Image 1: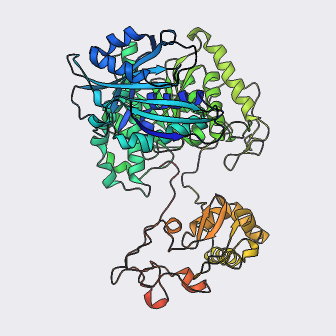
Image 2: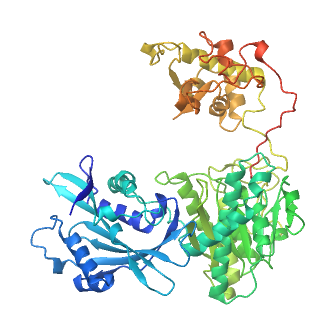
Image 3: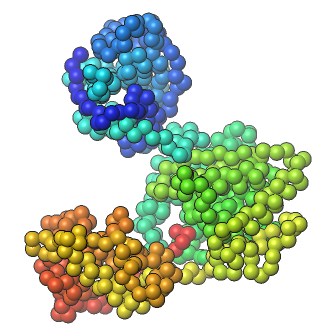
Length: 639
């Protein structure tokens, strides 16, 4: 058997051989993490099989013998271990492509794990609508873990018939890709051997249904990208809401089948933001409505069939929804911990879906308690705790969306009987009260004291849920205050920029700085060191802004590059530093330059770029103010 490719493991490799099988399971169960043309796989239950079972499994006797010989020719078998004593573990996986170009044919693989020899073999085949199987002999391959000289570990890729290899880029990747891309990833995964804090994506849904529906909805609503009226990235937000809508639609379809429901579920989206999720769900036949404290421009594009209401939501008897099947909290910020409570109090049959983002408690910003967890994991655990105390059997899943906050929580059923509702409500009320008086809580909004209580009156410890059970909660303002340093006085910003830049440019090699041969880039400062240059009154102003000094420096992208908590002078000739091609094309004649070049005005050696290559004006003669009014950029928290 020819060896196609080998890669050695670095270091002592204390994670092997267990890490090898952990890495193999990633490729078996989640190939979409490296093969972006796949949505996922559907895997049968694993079972132990022997030689005869493999012969019958592969159906073709000659091919089965070839495969058995292919698997047996490795010399990595432990001493005194006989083939009949080490059965293989067999499973079958079915590929689910993002775009199905195979018609009714299914592309599958028989997977044979041999733990005695530390090898796993993949036997691909196709199955038509009538169940007829066609084996792909040329695409049979194997990963083999080897331990040499009791010290070095290596991973090998073997192919049964490499000259017959066929690739379609989806179910059958290119052979060079397996060796140059996948093999090194398996080595890295095996040595890291990390286990995720969260569940695999789409663990609560049939992936094949999700894939088909997502492609349908993506095609149906992709036109929204071209007409997006908001200042946010249209592709990110359109396709993210399409993915969330897909998840809910499949989840609800599965629920209807499970419960024998005929009518589509109703919903209420609390903190609906741009309203696109409401629009898609309503368009797909689910009666529902979205509520948000601020109206968005895009609302006017949806038409009267999409019900959206501009209103501040305060947890109380006024915001219960007894006739609604599902409550949705999609990046609902300060409402997030309240959504399981509102669902529980709306009716015994009300369910919820929440996708947490920013970290809020009931009456204040959420305060960390466990340093051994990531902040995100700790917050997800907190919302799970709220859900369980509220009375839900709580399930966790991970969405496939372009966001770092992808973990959702679902409450589909209760953990108590309806006859125990009074006792369950007592638990909820006591828990919320305990969180209101939690030590160390910080202010959520103006009007809340530092201890978490409302400054307009103390909470009554014997209070029962009535119209005031949300006292202490402060919804966000209808007009959001911009606190990203954009509203600071221009003289203040210019002074900070010049002060930090001059210190960096003045750093010598002894200071950790230095110059390039032709243009001084200086050294670097940590953000804390840069803050030490500021006057106290300047720091006080910056502390009132989100992100403080670091945000101000990042906003001045023309001058600075902020990476890893350190501040550098940006060199626009450097592709990495400038995020642009070093082979800059001259600007078109007459191109507008509406901003002056900071380096031309302030750097001792002026700008490193020639005037025709620089996007900023070198002197007043090049400054041509635009006759068009600039579009005012604003931050939308819900979009």
